[in-house]
Length: 259
Ligand SMILES: NC(=O)c1ccc[n+]([C@@H]2O[C@H](COP(=O)([O-])OP(=O)(O)OC[C@H]3O[C@@H](n4cnc5c(N)ncnc54)[C@H](OP(=O)(O)O)[C@@H]3O)[C@@H](O)[C@H]2O)c1
Image (cartoon, rainbow, N blue to C red; front, side, top):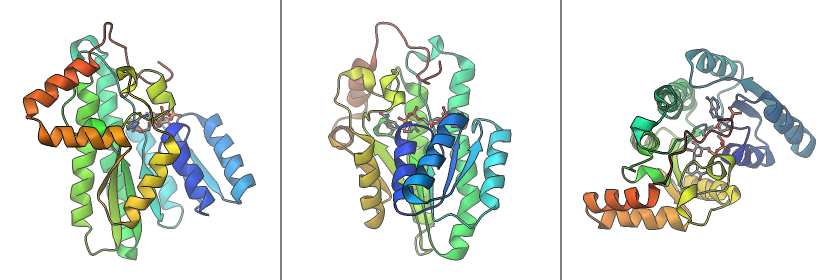
């Protein structure tokens, strides 16, 4: 479970613990992970192994891979850690934009490639990748973020097909605006005035879609409506609408809660 310290990741961790799954919780904020570990032990008697790591770095990925290798092949892997930014690309911090690609794309490929061989050999497992409704089309003023989410969606749908017949399932989760630190701090679609979904709804929709063998799940009304719009409208029109709904008077310099 990456990004287990808050938001959607914390909600997936709680749901997995409630189902009796031991956790490997990965994020940078050790205090949040320790609190999660205590909660999972006290409430559900579930063991949590903590990995304090920056997954935008090779060192962080190596720590995470090493911890995975210390135990049995996981039943469910949720690759959820991610962040976004908002504003015209040329006004944003170049290093942060590259970091976003490393976290939202490179880390997902790296960890998926690391866990899948064991799952395939065992003939069982689930890989959950956190994409977004931002993946349906390019989004001006959120260009890098939407592109990383499209990458995650395409990667996961392709993996789901590669895994056909192996007993291992892959699913891309595509939420619309969801109430978390990320969205409330100005990232994602928070600024557009659209109502937010709850993290619990996204988690439950994920488990239902996995059980049905889906390779992607748009969660919530906004995600479903925007998917329909991106299919029905010409590409030029949908990108123009996305520009109008995501333009801001002043660009935010990134949406990470600590920036
Ligand atoms: N909220 C929405 O509206 C929405 C909609 C669609 C998709 N999503 C996606 O959902 C995922 C989770 O976002 P959220 O909304 O739950 O936001 P969040 O509350 O800010 O959670 C982000 C998580 O990612 C972790 N993280 C960030 N940078 C990291 C790094 N370099 N290394 C390791 N962990 C890192 C954070 O932990 P630390 O800070 O402790 O490292 C945190 O646990 C993201 O991939 C986001 O794109 C969110």
